[in-house]
Length: 149
Image (cartoon, rainbow, N blue to C red; front, side, top):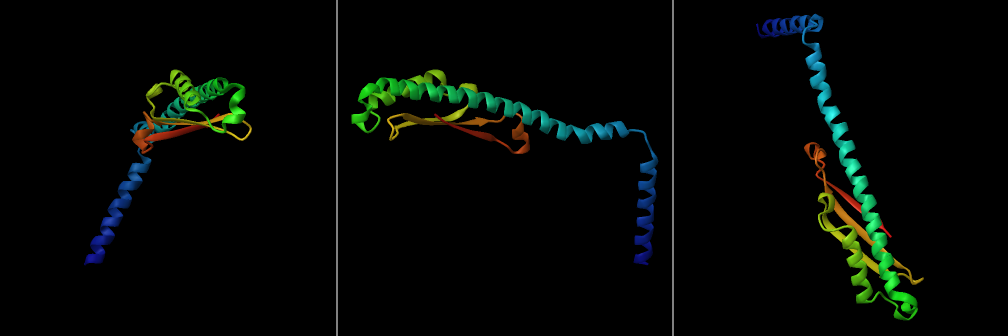
């Protein structure tokens, strides 16, 4: 008895699926709704990655400006110092923050650090976190961006 009811149900479902496959009405709505999510992911990804590229470019410029300002402040006495003095570090930080202020382009957790290398050049590292605007719908909340100068 149970086998015949199960077989009848499968037959009815199969017949319904065949009718649905032959019916052309409403196909456009189904295709558009199926394509909407991947389309939103592509547009959102390109928008957020474009913002990330812009932030990375500006962060690199600010990092370079801070490192160059700190090195200029050191002058020829860098060889005898051995490390970056506080005054040069403060000038480098000021130049960095002038070119890339806190929360610039919606960024968070801005970090900039400099050190004096063995060849008396000032090297720096900068990093920020950029919250996504569209890709957060798909689970990508933040983009971490880091540069070296």
